[in-house]
Amino acid sequence: MKNILVSGGAGFIGSAFARYMVARYPQYRIIVFDKLTYAGNLDNLLPISDEAQYRFVRGDIADRAAVKAAFQEFEIDTVVNFAAESHVDRSILSADAFLHTDTVGVYILLDEGRAHGLECFLHVSTDEVYGDVHEGYSVEGDGFAPNSPYAASKAGGELMVRAYHVTHGMNTVITRGSNTYGPYQYPEKLLPFFITEAMDDRPLPVYGDGRQIRDWLYVEDHVTGIDVALHYGKAGEAYNIAGEDLRHNIDVTHDLLGKLGKPETLIRHVPDREGHDRRYAMDASKLRALGWTRGHTFEQGLEDTVRWYADNTWWWRKIKTGEYLEYYQRQYAARLAAAEQSRP
Ligand code: NAD
Ligand code: DAU
Image 1 (cartoon, rainbow, N blue to C red):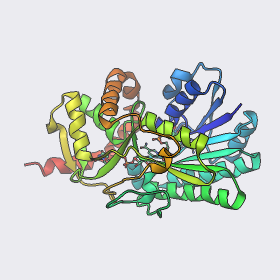
Image 2 (tube, helix red, strand yellow):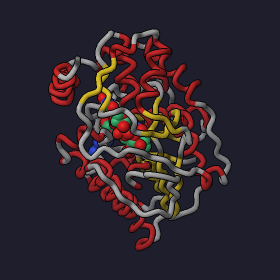
Image 3 (tube, rainbow, N blue to C red):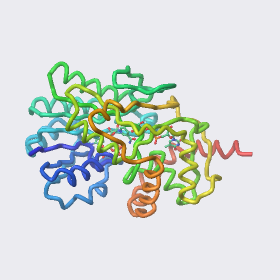
Image 4 (tube, rainbow, N blue to C red):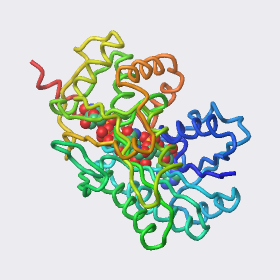
């Protein structure tokens, strides 16, 4: 029996992982441990809420007593850590919560995990630690060059994971995922934000020229990548999980408008994100050598994602109120006004 603590498991990718693990491994117990920040949502876990092998605990990974209590109560032997502040734009507005969770929180989880005698600690990280990749593809041994406060706080967490492996001999594995999309993604990230805004015929604020490049990975493929790394990854190693499907933001925007049957006149080119990385690109050969393959093309994944948001308006309409609208005002009001002024 494995008792797996899935921290951050009420968020987008963590909840997909929890749902997948319950279906795939009936012999494991899945304990979701989540602070339920603005991005955490118990609706994401409704499909497994009645499963006997699943439990939910509300808690902060930076709260030592809460982490220790969960480890003891559920006899945790494995941690898969998704918990993070995950949105670059919010980290530009203020980085406090990012340091708290993505760096200090990771340290607390590791330290309590070590004291508790964990068998395995898998840490979910990001391609953003490599920074802007002008050409070629990042491999796992490349150096870090994080450019946003989000990426820097994730790099800090990762380095602590490395230190606990080297110094204390902990069995750690790190995964670095690329831009992930799919059902249940909080509608602040490019795809769910633009899909849901376009459905309501609202403007789509494309940062700068929209020629930035991201590598798109369907959430189910990210989750199977983590599963493979968890079961077959080597202690102390990191593994890239890449869609290896590079696209310009503006092309992605045209694609989603096409799928929704909405006009391109919704596009607004607004002032760019500060410190905006132009291109991310990773090589996933190391994970493929363990047996992982990507199951979805971008075309299929986008089709499924657009359909999911169309069929599940109950899920995102509840979110687009209160704090969400305040954030929208702070992030977009001035940008959209500037775009309006510069329109011919
Ligand atoms: P998300 O923002 O949807 O979810 C984050 C979850 O963490 C939420 O449920 C939130 O409540 C929880 N959380 C935040 N602070 C916490 C704390 N102190 N203690 C406990 N729980 C806390 O994020 P996501 O997109 O699902 O990303 C999950 C992980 O994957 C993150 O570590 C992120 O850095 C990484 N990642 C994301 C992507 C992507 O494209 N979304 C790509 C690569 C890596
Ligand atoms: O690369 C992995 C990372 O991908 C993860 O580590 C992060 O958690 C995740 O948020 C994501 O970061 P990005 O900054 O790449 O994702 P975001 O969806 O915020 O933006 C994708 C691209 O779209 C980026 O170039 C900025 C641009 N963009 C985004 C928004 C929200 C716009 O042009 N307009 C927007 O309104």
